[in-house]
Image 1 (cartoon, rainbow, N blue to C red):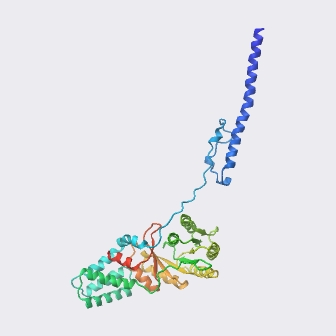
Image 2: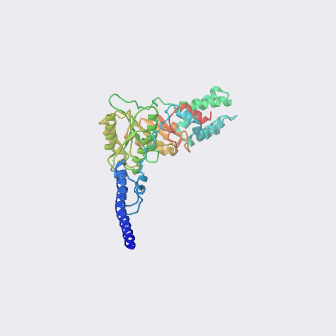
Image 3: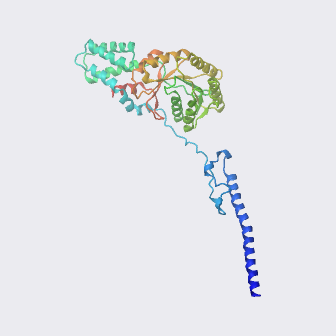
Length: 393
């Protein structure tokens, strides 16, 4: 009898254990799946933004009850922190030392020649050669030599200070221009100022457009960028990056090779609607020998002018290309009315004389110069600072 009682108790215990396991296991697994679902439902952003590598294990993998609490929702892509660029005022003065390092050879050679005890014809020929080598150009170089010879004859004495003062005065006279160097970016009543940035690829055109946007934002202006260089795949992305850093919207086409004039028109229209201060339009820059590019550039300007006036056409030139840059400038000037020159890479192997040559050739002032690779190395051109940097003073 006792044996039967013990057997019944053992069977009952086993049955209770099995029943308990069946009741507890489904409830625990249901809790994990519901927890996972709740976590996904609460995460922000569309499902496509979920990083699959950060989700929990597949459903067929064993998990302990409650492990869903360890799920971490995928993080959204962080937007770049908005930068606060410095104002444009005083930039060239701050970058003067960098400019002096690259241009002082030109100035030192001239000062050395003019300080000789005897200035004969051979010496003046050397002075002219130094000027031409510095990309001043043949005609301006001869004019400078003629002016200096006259000053030396009239003044007589030539102490080191006299020579420096005389040379500084002559270079300032050659760099000077009657045209205003002021950048026309002030908003008009009812519409923004519009600036077209033109030039061949490789001169730093798109980068200049981005740096100029930074400079204008630093001066307190609101800027919209138009990515009308639709023939170069990376141009719009590059401009987008510049815009995001300073909070400037970029109008671009999702279609590669889209009509540049259409993009420019949309950019200006958006700028008018949003009442921004300035619209900067980056244009295509294929080789200047291709007539279709010149035709397209003229079309962009005409189409924009159907919506509003164009205040500035800035031609970007690589200062290191010297006389080749002047040939490019002539071609662009024939298609659009260039209002200002941007000389990039002036801190490198460029010769400072290109400033004199390009202004004389086009009758257009140098308004901006690129003095480095940094985002804030684009500066308004200041003749006195430029000449002093050449002379190392």
